[in-house]
Length: 166
Image 1 (cartoon, helix red, strand yellow):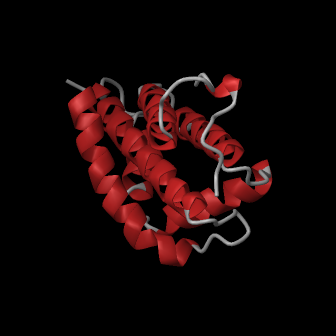
Image 2 (cartoon, helix red, strand yellow; image 1 turned 45 degrees about the vertical axis):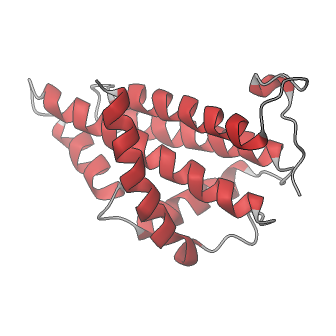
């Protein structure tokens, strides 16, 4: 079972009355906002790289909370496997809108990429939070089993990003 406190570098005070769930929710939402900002980068694929780095950082922080060993390279493969398996829902639009940024004057694509990037990060955070809270590790993660939940959380993440984009 995970410890009920979060390390200070995750900006949660050990003495606060915040529950683990609230602490994790704050960490996920912070990374959603960062991903939304990365989605606004007007350079094709720079946004994609930035969001991937943000998701790696999110999973590093979640793994620290749950005392799960973290390997940057291995986790990057897991993220790709999870998101790639849900390609029509999240990865396809992210790549498409990123490429569309090459068309001059297409700021709409940056806004769309921002929302999808935030929703994707939200879903990744929720999937791994559930997995870790059930005692899972990166080594025991099965992206095929997690895809349905990822797609559900991606839809929920779209609502979250729409609320925060107002």
